[in-house]
Image (cartoon, rainbow, N blue to C red; front, side):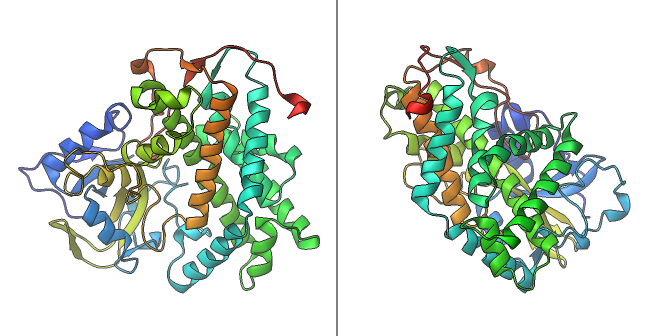
Length: 412
């Protein structure tokens, strides 16, 4: 991999704590020192490029041939140990749609998109409201809770599991398994096993007795795809839909609780919820950086020489804040959806998946504000901490207080 010039600032390590504490300033510094494409190092001092520029990121994501999703192209594999911590994210011979390319990827993406498009939006919102009310029922009498740990991290997967075809009884176990995996808890391996066994069990059940759900539709449309491919895609969709949506809820609530512009929403109005959610996608996007793309040949990008097989990371948050494409006020919010929060190009998050995530997040926030109208931050805003990750940006917790109210229970 091409190294920076001797007079250039050194590469930034992706373990730099500023990815959590002050990413906006870090990206400004990287852009000043390195330009639109910056050298970075991963765990084990493995080199890569981080794309900071909006136009450059558009170029990378719009050219899947030159900047491929095929991880076998990587020119650093001989340096990667078997216990490298990023192997679950950047692995070889992975069966999921994330690492397929060409026509095979387009076919699999079509199956996923069609299955998600068939989800009835009214049923989806109904499921989201029901599970949100159920969670609030367990919190409303306490007078205080952690919105992240006790609400946001529990809601998205419950809804997704329901539309995928799991029973409501299976939902809590799937949530625990997924959160254990995400947080690297002691039960992470058991959580991975539970999720895998549950997914294969679901597919076996739906193959025998199809229903009006995502899993059944993928099985019906997936002629030519193996059961492993369908299972892997469903598990990727669950993970990709759960954590970012939970962070979207948490980051949006943080904004509404700390910014006076959204005070009206906390008084029972809903008109600012969508504005807060959209602003988060620009300024505090849940998916901050994405791995990765690999250059299929030597090329140039943002004034850099990118070698064949170099790893290129997508700096979604940095591109969103690129001063070259921002307005004078610095805020491209409101109805402007040109953010990179869902990616771009043929490997972007499918449009139906984006819509499902938005319904879950918005419904979750609206139900919370309806049920706990005087909710308020229980700690100083500057005491809120982020998870230590350069990839996903979310709060470790969001403590709030409110007037205790009775549960709706069976009356809802």
